[in-house]
Length: 199
Length: 222
Image 1 (cartoon, helix red, strand yellow):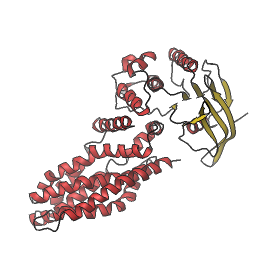
Image 2 (cartoon, rainbow over the protein chains, first blue to last red; image 1 turned 90 degrees about the horizontal axis):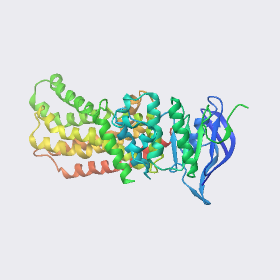
Image 3 (cartoon, chains in turn yellow, green; image 1 turned 30 degrees about the vertical axis):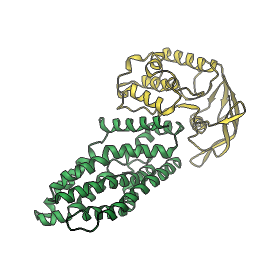
Image 4 (tube, each protein chain N blue to C red; image 1 turned 60 degrees about the vertical axis):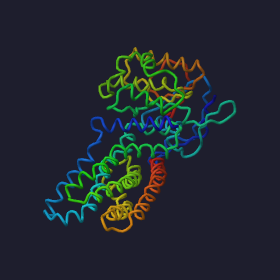
């Protein structure tokens, strides 16, 4: 599987954020998007997720020469986590699983991997910022999708959770997955760095 | 896909009944509107029973508008809408499923409560039944028409007012045929079937148009 981004340009609010962006990510590889605030890292991830139309250029996912639908093969974990405060953690995760399809781990097993099993029956409203982020990350495990788009995945995480996340990403890459992550901090995985904006 | 849509409907029903869900908001507003009317119009039972079906319909229309602004806005704010757009399920089906859940939680209860509230207006029993029956396709039509406005104002703060301005004109034909159906159910009224069929046709058209236009509006967000 291969993610091919060619000559991508993005415009937000009448301003061109970046243009001529081209890179390729192969199965088992990760790409780190770096750059100053407002450079367009989140916008690039939204384009890859199929939520935002690029100004020009295209991003596509190929599997053995055949093009497959990008947004249906990707997980996007961003600042807006899509968790409902009124629902239990278990209800949130089982909804994500039913919605996204191709189920893999159960909600309970996914939370156990993230060392968060004890919050399974709590409403999301009671979670701390770090716990909430980890519940959002558990979505990566309840539905199997090869491309992970992570926007500041380590935000609000403590050092133990960062280590768990690093291991999860390592396992995903070893299993032939792809990762594109926007970050300001090293993630502890071997990755090609792609700089957006500035010099 | 069916599994995803059923999960979406049951999630929205759960959210509607939890704290802050607004499940009871529309029905309480409806009750308040019907209950204060006799104080304004006066205790003339003949007059009340004559305008009763129309009052029940206007109340149902206004009660439908309440809560519609949050139909897509809540999911837009917290990113759940992005999750739905990445599910591979067509956005039209998602808009339809969310509208169905909204109708089950706030539209259908209005139709069920209408005969009860109609008692306070002194409407004849057979007309009570007719009004309730007309409100079943009527609230479907109102909800799906409203979904267009909800989708257009999904990313606006305080979009409720704009939503009302956008969709109330579209709801006028539904109101006309709805009240005509309710009036026709009175003893000695004209044929009930004809306006009822027209109303049902409007409901079916609203289901199709609401889903398609709503999805297009959500896709066009900046």
